[in-house]
Image: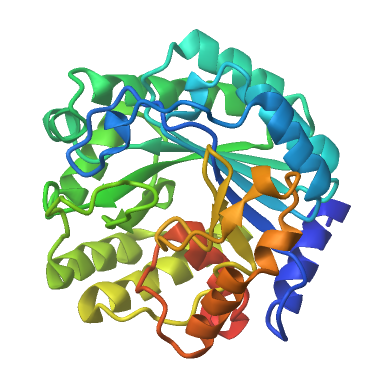
Length: 352
């Protein structure tokens, strides 16, 4: 076990026994620019101005060095021409960084994406995971995403990543399926279609989230998108029953996430208290800090604290968040962006 992996394992274990002094995961929306026209999300309607510059991100990374896991999200991350330099800034400052994850809608020029990924891979981060957003088979995905030909571009991106994996053992990818009322009942057909189009794909290569309502991220509080819980639980069980055991720690945690997703879908009750605002935080592209992607409670803005998180996480709003978590009155949420840290802070739930 190398030093960076040992570091994240050690931190996760410590989170089982008390409050962590600093968050070890950062969910960071690097931009809200997006070419998609999703029926489940309103991010694409934004015309963002004043997003954090590369220099500001470098200052933030230099002052917050505890991150061992960073998710760069959007919008579409590859619309930032400096995405590789953003990754470099965190890798240079966060010397314990073990994993970098990034979702993509696969709509950017493949040659550009490959160039940026090659640059990121050259940094030596031990693990880099790409999530290919895919919400259905060809006709369904293109309709939900609002972009004709999007499914075929996802498939082309998957084939490209398969090729790149032959040279880069640190690279991995999964298909990220967001289940909503628009695609409910279509998971099996979607997986079958992808397996036919991309040889070598297995059920372990699919990740499922339930559609969520979020004012501070998706800006979709006006949309009626939630899937029927009982039917959603059946589909997640279907996926679980076909997943093969893997000793890969991420696959083990993913299986635990899915088992708890079944409970969440059936009951509408969060399986366990989150570690939002403690083990992880959400930073938007304007410097605003929130406990999580799904919790619309602004804790502060790093532009007002010389890019340091400490004053934000020590403020009254953050203390209120921790109190709500203790009292079990936090907003109900179960998405992988925060649930993984919750599970790692409750190891017994992973091996149950």
